[in-house]
Amino acid sequence: MDVTTLTALSKWMEDTDLDEVTWRHGKDSISLKTGNIQSESCVPVSRLQPVLSPSVGIFRSSVPGHTSNLQEGSKTDKGAELGWIETGKNRESVQSPCAGILKIIAIKDGQAAEYGQPLFFVETE
Image (cartoon, rainbow, N blue to C red):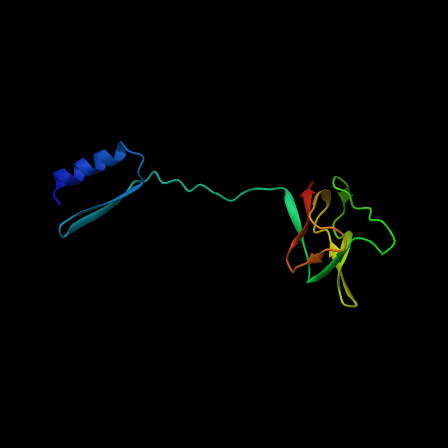
């Protein structure tokens, strides 16, 4: 590739929104990158912290015969028990990972839960 073609190609690239271009002609090829590439983070940001099921089983929010005090919008402390998962005779506690407000209750008492399934979402303070 001659200098004239290279200059024309680089000037053309400056006038576009391209960050990289590869040019091929016969056996010749060249790749050009502009120095304007900006790394933008595409990671979503949320204040909602999921509360995941610690095991497979049946979710229980209260002792049979009693009603649960869990309501969307209620405050919760870090480590507060939100319910438990029953697997046979075993009970595994479901605890809030942080202090905040219980925004979403994604499971009902008596429903089956899978390991790692989001059961609640807590908005951190």
